[in-house]
Structure formats: structure tokens, C-alpha cells
Image 1 (cartoon, rainbow over the protein chains, first blue to last red):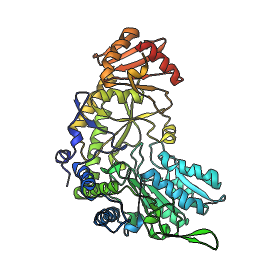
Image 2: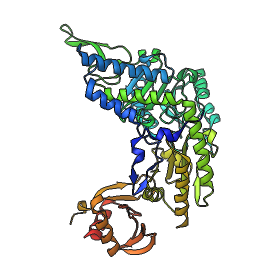
Image 3: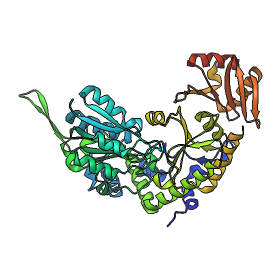
Image 4: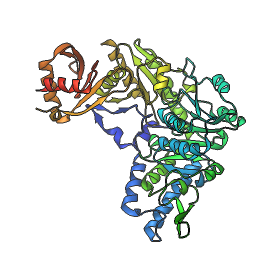
Length: 412
Length: 88
């Protein structure tokens, strides 16, 4: 069943506005997505009728807020087929989720003789935390190469992994090219070598059906704002047995069960809280969690297979239209089935920022620059690129308009 | 005149091309565009919405939407000096 994007568009108030006197065409979905009125309403409703701190008081409002916040964890757990809310840690976003693993797991488990594998395809947020930690712990970082067509070099991965590898950190979908990596295959090889696997799901969870059990990943990180939810909320999924053994990330309220002062040692004796609260120090982003829950319900109602099918069709059409324009170059694979709805491109004679500003003039929003993926740009020999990325509310007519304006740029 | 009277934000674009993107205040953009069009040399105009300009050997592209992209500058201070001259 294909989705009806015209009906979906009715749920997104922002899509009715004009930019520079033109109807808004929002093609920067890989950076963040727009929000349906259902998500906006539930956040407003929380502050208007249920607002209280969670897990802190016995009064009615606190109980309501706690129940909503816990339900949000449960809903996200079901969405990715986790075993329960104990495996779902709410964080600020993908970046914080990866940093949590780097510091809580990496600090205590990685030593000088160990190796960590990342790929050249990664967003900076799945490179920098490991680079930082390697400077402290002294382990080696190995980068898996990318092929000329933008797909991951699996042979290079198999050559680089060994019993020294303790964790493999890889994105399921590249935020530059949209290439979908075979995470199941990578996880199998990682586990055969007794390594863990952390998957950056920022560009996959919003766009594909993701099942952590089927993929057999140890950690999965993703952001709420890239999947119709609010900014400032994201998820770290971790296998329960691994999370249980890990030290907390930050210290404070909520993450402890007991802090008792021992008069003999003059120190506090601390007992950690249960999962997932052990990793959620301080007052959490309650409204963000509830907003994310609503976004997940919205996507579930559409069906992730349908989301995928819609984006594949749009991507295929967009590539076809863009290839008709002489000065446009598309990077990475051109086959829509190999990727999500992300198309990096350039227009001969124009910088990516020029292209983005020109399109902006016509109300079309695309990203320009490195998209936080400088190593992959370097692998392609690019100074920067423009990037169009699609979601459930985008339609073919928008792609037609986009292609017309691109053609106009090419004629300057 | 301070450039802050006209300029809302300056962004140093990421990428090897060290472009600076200048975003003019919405209510002052037309005034800023008029001033810049008077002072800089017009190399090319596209449909009256995009202007290719040069000023003091620096080329830049100005958009009717109130945005401009300056190329080939090494320092932000160089851009600020140019904008001061252009908008005075």
C-alpha cells in the first residue's frame, strides 16, 4: 500500500507557509523533519494539563507525568522491537547517545592494545567521540574504506576486523549519500570476532523498518527530531545485559536509588537506579519524550514499509529528473533501492552554498556544505555538496519544481 | 552606521570553499541591497533576483531575498570592513 502524501501534508501546518513568496518545498529532512499537529498538540497538552516532574512525588500530576514518560519509553521499545523500556535510554539525540556509549562503556572497556572500527561514511558524531577517547585510552581507530560508488567496502571491513576489535561503530544509512549498509551482516562479523556493534540509526530509524533483534545490534542511536518528534530528545537502545554492566554516564538525581553517607569512611555509598533511569541523570525532557511517543505512533500508523516505499519512489523520480539536467552531478549510487531518500549533488560552476541560496530564493530548502561528513566528502574529492532529502510529506510536484529551478541555475 | 544595523547574521560556510554567507535583517534588506547595488560593480543580473557583483576586487553574489555570498575572503574582519564600506 502506498501512502497518500497529500493527506499527510494536511497534518503539517508549516507546509502551508510561503518562503520568499513561493510555496515552501522542504527538502532538508536529513537535517530535521517537520512536525505534525498531533506531535505539537501532545506537547502543548502536556504543559497545559499534566506538567510535573517525573519520579519525584506522589501527587497526581507527578504520577500522570511519570506514566506518560514511561509509556514513551515503552512505545519506542515496541517501535524498534526492543525487549522493553529497560533497553531504551532517552538522551538529547544521536550525538549524546554515541557519547554515552563511548564514555560509559568505552572508558571502562577499551585499553591501549584494543581497536575500534569506524567507517569513512560516518557522521562526525560517530567519529569524534571515538577519536577523543582514543587520545585518553590509547586504543587504535581503524577506518573502513568506501568504494567509488559510495557503498561500504565490506571486504576492507573484514580485513580490518580482528580479535583486537572491541566495538564496531557504523551508520545504517549514510547522511551524505543515503546508502543503506547491511548492518545485519556487519553485526554477524563483529560478533564472530567477539566485538560489539553500535549503529548510528539517525538516518535509518525514521525511514526504514528497524528491528534490533533481527539486526542483532548491541547499541542503536537515533534522534527524535529526524522522525517527526521534537528537538532535544533521542534514544539509545542497548541490550539489557550490556547496559546493566555499564557504569552511569552522568551523575545526579534520578539515576541513583540511594546516596547514603557512611560516617566511618566519610564517603557516600551510592546505589544506581534501575534501567533505564541509571542513564538518565537529572530531570529529563519529559515533554520531548511524550512528543517522540506521538511521532512514533504517527509513523506506526502509516507503516514503516510504506514510508520506505514512498521515499524510494520519490528518490527514483528525483534522480531521473536531475539526470536530465546537463550541469547536475549526483554523487553515490543512483539506484533508489540501495539508498534512503537522500541525494547529494552539485551544479557545475556553482558552489553548494550558491545552489542552496538560489533554491531558497524559490522557497526550496536544501542543505549545503559538508553535512558533518567531511571524511566522506574527501573520499569523493569534494569541497562540499548540496543535498536534497525527502520524507513522507514530499510529493512529485515538488520534485518537478525543484528540477525546473535546478535547470534555471544550469542556464546562468 | 554599524553593519549590525543591516546584518542579522554572518555564517562561515563549512567546506573547503571559505564562503561567507551574510543574512540581512528582513526589514532592512531592501535598503541594504540598494546601497550595495550603488557601490559595487554589477557584473551580471539574473532576472533581477540575483546579482553578480564585485567590490574592491572581491566578488559576491547578492540575492533579492536578502542574502549574499562572499567568496575568497580569508578573514571575517575583511568581510566586516567590506560590508562597512558597502553599507555606509
